[in-house]
Image 1: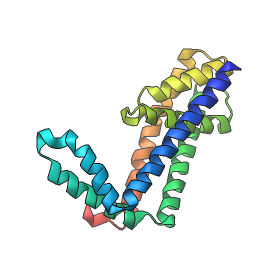
Image 2: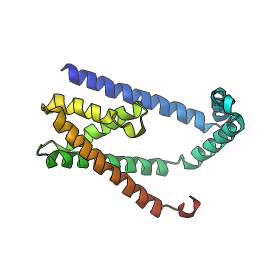
Image 3: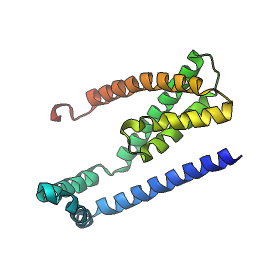
Image 4: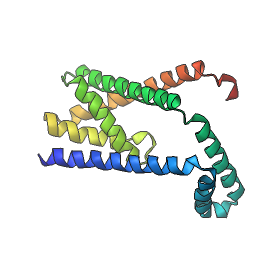
Length: 183
């Protein structure tokens, strides 16, 4: 029971942090003046490298890009792509468990992938490397009474095959985008 309570606290905390950061980010990026002011306050980090002019240019370009792509269609398409990737990763995790002889619910695998992704982003590690697997081990060992070796085997298989899904999806999206010649 304590595990579910702490898991829900982690999830609620992660959602609250993401919502707050997203809200502040949108608030800052909507106004060019606020964007410039925000990055101006952060420019003290860049004084040693004399990047202040670049920071100002960056803030102006970031605001312009946000204003250009903030429409609902772009946000909806981005959400659909994210949901699709989480669905595919959940299916890869499910197949990884099946390949080592363990039967787990598909819906649970998809939910855990979404949850571990949220937790992994909070660690600021590239790709959530390690933290995602640690949360997976914790959840699957507590809920399904699996050994750490079984869960890590499935997590490593999932990570290996999941990486290539991103590469292929990125290649398809890049090939089908209208920005082909601008990269």
